[in-house]
Length: 149
View 1 (cartoon, helix red, strand yellow):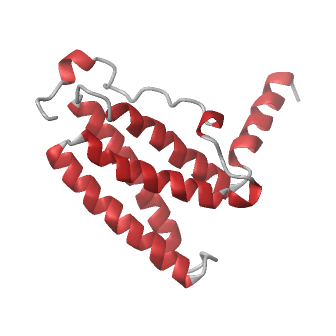
View 2 (cartoon, helix red, strand yellow):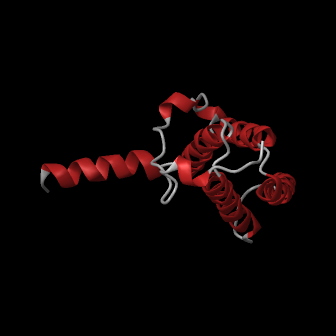
């Protein structure tokens, strides 16, 4: 096995080895993206893409939780599915109104779930998660400004 292949394997093991940590890192990456869209001016396309990406993450989580083979206790499943319903409803409202300060609740939810997922291992710090790559088509802020505040 060549050195580059080994390095890729080691990197993959670190990222994908623990499902709870992987999910926590994805939630924190989403937090970082949402922190960007909180800053004025509102860039409509970036705002929408970021929120849709977060909602897709929660949708994936909800699908996994709903699986009959998911080992989580029923009470935890119900609580997480209720959170997903809230995230879905709140995201829909944000996509209509684009009020950056209202993103804070989604940031808080993601942070708290990420911390809960990794509590046994001491939690996860945002600085431990690399900054996410820019979203496609969201690199030109001048063409995406919106009048929303």
